Image 1 (cartoon, rainbow, N blue to C red):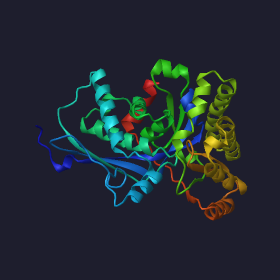
Image 2 (image 1 turned 30 degrees about the horizontal axis):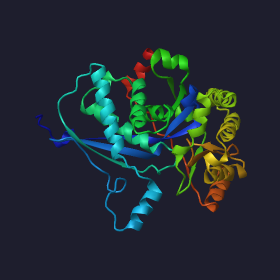
Image 3 (image 1 turned 90 degrees about the horizontal axis):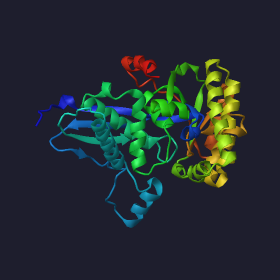
Image 4 (image 1 turned 60 degrees about the vertical axis):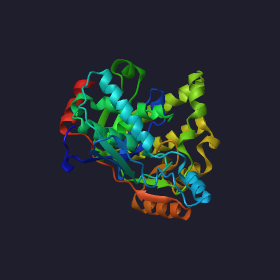
Length: 359
């Protein structure tokens, strides 16, 4: 057994993500522009231990309740699942990936625990943030960060979530692995040739001021993809053409950001939501989610979902006075609203330098 010290304990963080343009086309071979949010994160702590232990969270993984009413209230607010299953899944995926790729892992054990301040069911990719932070711990604990390329890591995170039946694409995981602002191309050509998309980090200073709007009790963001996915698989021409149009919005938005053409960016954001609404329908999107978008638009702000629903990203093309109107309108409607601070890049200088050589 390896002798360990407290100094070997580590904590890694992964941030919530906002899909600025292109979602949900990442699930359909499209493109996306996304970024990580500095104020919202999940942390995973790893410490060496004699036995391998995954610790339940004292609030998110409750199995003891003061009453039946308290149990039901907890399930109504947070669902049946906490983070333990996410940690177990990424441990399995990490182990299997290393085994399949001839990456030797030292025979030693650890204890994993997690915490998060990302609002639940708000379409901010809180689950994958836990998985991403856990993967980062495993990479460093076993000293294999340089053996699993940055571009591959989002695939591992997504595979862990797929094991649990979570329907999602690579966009969220790329934004969390890379941090900062990223333009992503998931075309089938890239996926077939590389096994992943082409991901381009961008300067976060290209972004205008943006605002996050969410409800205290949002709907479940996991239900939105259901019927559209099947229609796409069935060759529905409207869905296929609409997804291509959504992907094009991300391509155009990338160019608009490089030119700091924020009026064009606002138009593209609104168009993104309008296309999603036509494809999914109001019942799937949910009345509360639609209301958040409409409240922002009522004062002239551009707005769209950050992901599959539960939260909205808004931009005020007319500046600070309009931003104040946005805050007032959201607060009067009972929504939380706050200006977004974008998280910095999560990559080391060596990892950033290695990206171009693999694409």
